[in-house]
Length: 298
Ligand SMILES: Cc1cc2nc3c(=O)[nH]c(=O)nc-3n(C[C@H](O)[C@H](O)[C@H](O)COP(=O)(O)OP(=O)(O)OC[C@H]3O[C@@H](n4cnc5c(N)ncnc54)[C@H](O)[C@@H]3O)c2cc1C
Figure 1: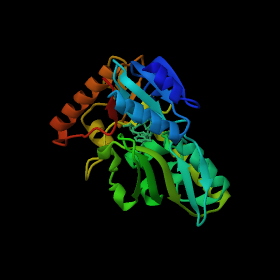
Figure 2: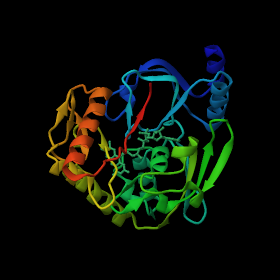
Figure 3: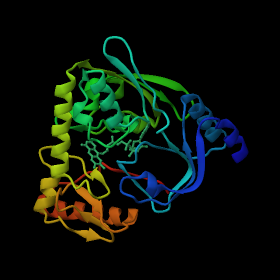
Figure 4: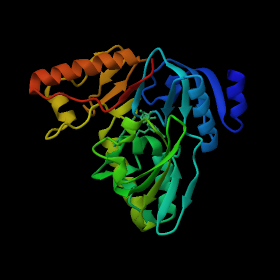
């Protein structure tokens, strides 16, 4: 079976028994059975067909900045999208971008081309695919504001296309969280911008981030979604949770919405700390915090 898979992978790379903490921003997670760094969509399709034929579980990982990976790891195939990194400037200020590019790489490209609209996303440490899956946003912007079209491959191996409205974007949600398709290419519609002004804005936003967020530690960003009418960080602060520690995971004292890995935290440490914070916040304010970060694996 593995020989058959390896034959499919002409450009892509397969590695066995890899510790997934090397692929996750929290630096937690057990091993993957097989990790594939996919290099083109045609090979991705063949891998999906192979997985279907043998009923093998498939997990997609972008930049690993919004996931907690189980300590037992991930069974089956873990597909890393970082090799899907083609980007093209088309007509009418539209850019087509494969999903493995990071948002930083995309914003750097847009600054070079003087195309404005995604500066808000420059410091979000995700891939383009992860950002669309999550409808990532910051400083008043969300990726949905500039997306015109999304191409995917279904887990049945069918190519599909979604318009912006088909994507059912809402706060940290897109329809792909329900369909489980694999996003392959995204089309963004930008506006003409000015390189100097865009660079100044990016610098300003990055400074705001490093002033407020504990970027010196591994984390997965804001652990919880913003509950309507509240700020998760303020609720966590008011419930006296800052500094709470379980194992190696700690509620950041710099930004209450973040949980940082201070000392070889496990996924279990994170899960227990999340449950404790949810309990304390509910007891203090009556608000149920909903997890934003995805827990994946066995
Ligand atoms: C320090 C820090 C700051 C952050 N700041 C922000 C912020 O300001 N705003 C914000 O919105 N988020 C923020 N985040 C969270 C995170 O960066 C975003 O959610 C990002 O969009 C996740 O992208 P990723 O590639 O890392 O996704 P991953 O963590 O790799 O995956 C997240 C989910 O998306 C799925 N997925 C990934 N790629 C694909 C694909 N191609 N097709 C289908 N499914 C896919 C995965 O299966 C998984 O379920 C922050 C995180 C950190 C660590």
